[in-house]
Amino acid sequence: MRLGLNFGYWGSGPSDNIALAREAERLGYHSLWTAEAYGSDAVTPLVWLAAHTEKINVGTAIMQMPARTPAMTAMTATTIDLLTNGRFMLGIGASGPQVVEGWHGVVYGKLLTRTREYVEVVRAILKREQPLEHHGEYYDIPVRGGTGLGKPLKLIVHPLRSNIPIYVAAIGPKNVALAAEIADGWLPVFFSPKRVKVFQQSLDEGFARRVDGKKREKFDIAPTVSIVVGDDVGVCRMHIKPNLALYIGGMGARGKNFYNDLACRYGYEQAARNIQDLYLAGKKNEAIAAVPDELVDEVALCGPRERIRDQLAIWKEAGVTTLICGTGNVDAVRVMGELAGQ
Picture 1 (cartoon, helix red, strand yellow):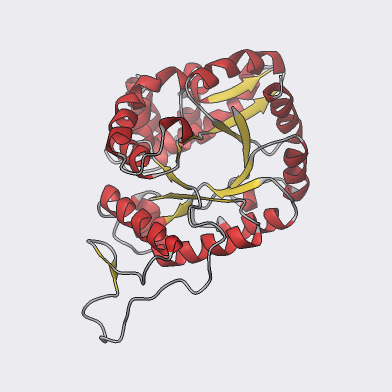
Picture 2: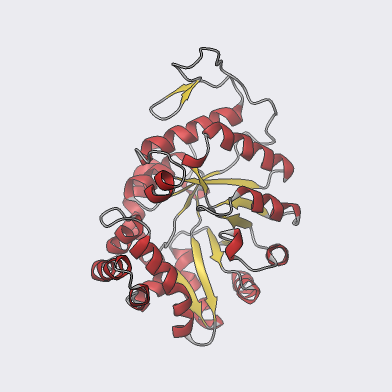
């Protein structure tokens, strides 16, 4: 099980992310990842990190699909891969309705259809086998009903790799199955290694539908896992609970919150309901307090070094192949690097 390091949103990280990236590279980490919501974008900081490192892979976790046409994403992926000499990994996702419609001004629509079309277009562009033509529900290329001057085009530059790895962020059953069917890797959030059965049927269905012959052993399961190292487990948990409360309680409307649904699928129905009720009522501190310790321990690694060491085995056994560490603390980065090498 290799390690990644997720810097999240650039503005919320440590002041010297370059030093952190270089330390991860020195320790033998596999990859660096960046994220975006409606602040800093995922691409610019990633290129900055890549320019200050030499060998470590760099990936987006995630680039929002509704924010970019698939052609723009393919151009960006090609460019970064060339600049980094083949170190880039393209992580994409749909984001949520609040951001997609409230920020980008794009109708959220059918998640599965958009994702499938998006990956098809990106892959076709990277292969450069013929000028691009795609006429789907979401992407009509060349567009019909315009000036009539549009014509099929082919990427001008030659990609360093036509098979740049594509990762899909997913937690819903059908979307997880789609990731297993069409992607090279899966980026789950709040993944619980104790609840692999929650995802197993979806993964099996997806792999059964693959047509490219890619073996399951080559599919990268790469969750981002919050890491907090400290002597007091309770104090460490409190660093994680606010984020869980935000996502389970406030990232989505009542009845349309993917993270709340996931907590329910894990068996925390009552807690998920309480967290959401409190959060939507403006009682954020109470919502944080309502996050169960058990849920934190399932989806994060926190506490003393020895406790984290003892918990790592279950992540390996669950099939995780790249554990992406969610931390901006250099000591935590070092502890994870040491433990992974044991």
